[in-house]
Length: 490
Image (tube, rainbow, N blue to C red):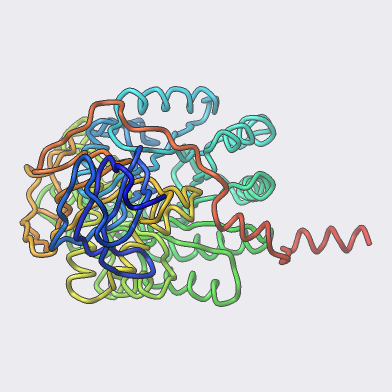
């Protein structure tokens, strides 16, 4: 592709960063794809001057709950329009939300219903994970293989919540299926009975305020379940990803397992860098605004998460956007009588995920700009089968770009955001750096604080085999089951 071709759009004079390097160049875009990266490109039909801006890959948020019923039957505050609008204003150009099966639901119908909602409303690109609550014979032999072939190459399972949790036997069934079909299993790792036992004792003593959510979800519940998930993964030698890692000990479990060669990957989220258990201890029910599972911990755990992000123990940084309004439709189903066990779990964060990490990570020197790109975009693309079209700035990749102004200071208020939640747990924080222009497949979707994208203009992106499963398929290691089977048949 020559540099004198008629580009649809050029991004000129920018400082470009990928997950491995930073350099100055122009970017030429045609038909939504990057076709040239070099200095002094000929003008396009449209030009954007990126002087003084960092030109980064658009973010990928691989853990968001959108237009989804919770296990308690509470509907999210955000639909696919408000969620994707909020995402793109924060520099994210692709999301992977959850098509959620609840017990009694048929997987093909769940996927079809969810796809229709997204197709009608999303303004940026999207894929789907599948939440699996009923791994019966039909699911394991028919429905899941078909979903995986159609590009839903990741499955989320829960080790807690009465209506969603799987036992260890079922988890092994799912891991075996994922290994056979080339899908990545994501685990919400908390020990259900520890939480249930603690919660019951607290409630018996009349301790129902939001702060006791953090007490019931003791850090050991996360640590034990994570160790167990790693052990199940090692038994079958199947990669897994532990979602929303919160606690100091959990980070150590994952780091130690990886040092032993375990194929365990992990994610963390803004709430575990910028909130603590003290935020749950507010007057009245205000602390409910900060309740999520696992809950925020303490300063030592915040530092452990930072270290995990820096050294690769935690490879992806997602929002776990779980948007519930602070009223009877969401956080407070019983009004003023709502106890911590009644509240919808989750905090919003889809729009602030990247600005928070840019400000407090890149601008303070905690992480490099290349690490920022990896944590917010490139690693997600590789982890979930979106590479090489997404997550990088390279010839042949989709022109998903965000132009960041590192000099801009922004004081966060919910009124400046674009979700439907009604509050933000990061109210009043002053952030340095902001994505001021955002492109999705070469379309300028955000500029001058204005949205330029129609409902339904986002595209479904079927995903290929996740990179951990590719590496597994190319490797020679064997789990215990394979070794035993080989010994039995020798």
